[in-house]
Length: 356
Length: 264
Image (cartoon, rainbow over all chains, first blue to last red; front, side, top):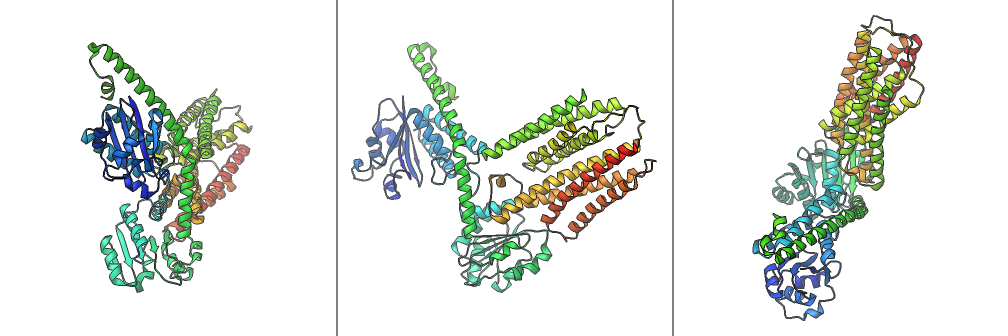
């Protein structure tokens, strides 16, 4: 049995090259055309990979040809960006991919769901057999272990997720937080959606154009607040998200300080993603106020990424253990399989038996 | 013989501290099950020590500074066992273990385990007063630990420099809620402890009484200011640390003067 992975990713090919190979072939069609016993195709925005098991050696060109079946181009033009991993290297690569170590943003968890989806799709079509079944089940287990036992997935790396992470570190549950969104731009909409996805219910939207405020409020199930009233809202709210196009700071320490007396035991988290900034930096000096502008949010994202990179060695060690254990268990299974073939009286497929 | 139990207990807390330091250095924090079990085991050894010593003395084992520190360390561990898992405060064990280690380490190293040559008859009111006050100190110690955690988290949020520990500390509002509850519990127990002191039937040194009432007033003032929203959470957290430091100083003073006066 020959286990291999052939693919291309953001490490080896740009998006223009990747899109030539994405979505053109299914696991079933590759299994049929290339003559593989088992096949699985993992396609994401950052990678196109084929995991396969075959009795004979199948060339990289052959798989490349299958992946670009709908076009008339010469696969040799594309062979260089393809990588190929075999046997335990293939196992290690899949474990790294599923754990988010090979992702553009190290530790991101989306790849885990995408790999599960790819596996389900291939399983439904019958392209996955006992070998890939065991391999992928183990990969999912490894990915979970890596996330649990290291800080690889800790910390947020986008504006929306940083805002949510910080809000959770201040308030805990966000369902009881009152949020005011000042300015109804695209970034504030994305950030608002991130907050809503984590349980925020009480949302108020204020904008110079009340119609636009109503529009965003409707989209996120909030309510519109006239622009003249937004300052008074600071007495009640817990989170303020600002992104207006104002040239001058809209909120200063002089405006906010008197309101803080009425809310001394409640922190106020301000996310100012506007450039120029809507909130004067001196506001951060006020007690109980946590002000993050776009630079400090980026800085937090970079710190999170640095933290994740520090965890790579610990994650690699977990993966290495699992690769050795998995390869050993498969070798034992294959030995039993060959013994069973020599002695048909043993009957049962040992790989399938161990899988069950 | 009984000291061996306290030594074993101290090693358990030392293991929790070493484990935390290793994880801090590796910048990897896993769910602190190890800390909880190490503290739980340490607590069992502490209990064994206090029980054996109590059997020997025929009374609550708080007759000298060594026993008082051991009892206080036991109170801290007890309150942690009750509070930590109940409020799901991650990393609280990591902060509790060093404090207990310090208290017990000091008790074991310093020459303060002075046994009395004669058996002193027990006074149940005095024992109740002392043990209740020490448990209250244990609650104040936990409030102090939660205060340290609050200030650490608050500082990181304010300065925008987030260390890996940031993602493992509880949210600010949860910590503040726990600080408030602990202050109320500690205050209630301490009040009972002080009031029971007046039923001992022995004249108490005036300095002790004044200092104990001053500490009671300090915690009453913190709680009143918190209730009336005069103090920001950060200041309440800082006052918890000051309050517990004052409580430790008072405890030292009380035990020292008690040694001088030999009040049974």
